[in-house]
Image (cartoon, rainbow, N blue to C red; front, side, top):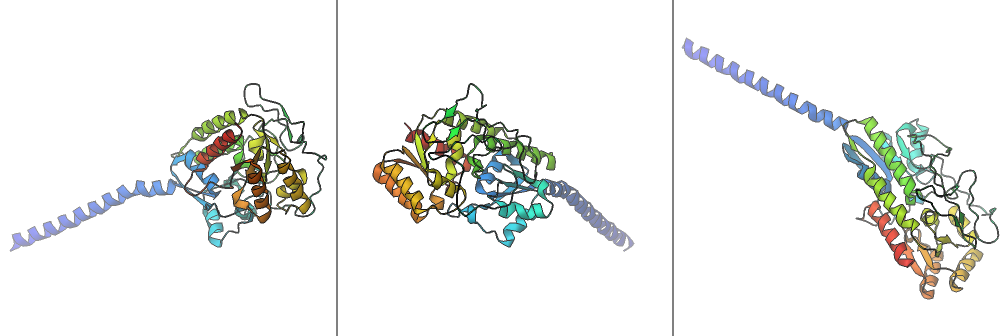
Length: 364
């Protein structure tokens, strides 16, 4: 009996000891997993455009989500939910275009003193557009975009010789310079050394190859700072942008007009000439409705054969822009559609390449 009892006790003690060791081992094994989960960077982008850029840069160690992904939604007028805003507040990194375009996401962060976690292309200014009269200091015909202070001083310092696009006729006088060194106003956010310059303050900066490359580099830097274990490399993006720059610079001269100023940076990086009536353009830049006179001037240009290609934004379509579109179709003007975000299921970087391909086809 005593032997049996002793055996039983030893067996019981052994079982408990083994169980204890098992629990300890499990606990030890799970520790690295928990640490790995804690090391994952939670990254929130304002739109799928920047979400796709983040995904191309941070290939491991990051969890990426975008607030606006639906191509049927106009980000200009998007109103975030409380859940959307909470995502931004709780994220480790927030990626936006800036310039007021996606202020609905970054303004709450700035107001809460969290601008350091924001990676952005343009300054983190408040969303304020002049919706009043669109008086402007441009001359009668076309725009002289010399942008001495803030815009592009465009001598196109992109390698080789560059090209002096002085569009004498009625288009923009873009002396290209994309030198990312100018000072930018507004809140700092994740401070990149290469301040992005704009065309007339245009917010559609994600169609500027230099801006996309600069943001990709900032994302990689910020990701490494937040988690040294993260795999983050801007090269997959910058290499594609370099290729797109070369293709844009190779486009032949053609007269293009825009129903919305989404193509400014594509025009600015090429020999394309923007002949959009100036008053219409200013209204579009200010997110104001063009007047009847603005529309008439646009239709006259189309009907008089002064437009080779129409850049059309289906995402911001109105009855007025539809009239411009239909007039262009009737006149046989080539149309290139450019949306605010890529169509559903299409990666933005692929979409950017598709847009450039469409421009190449339209200007043959």
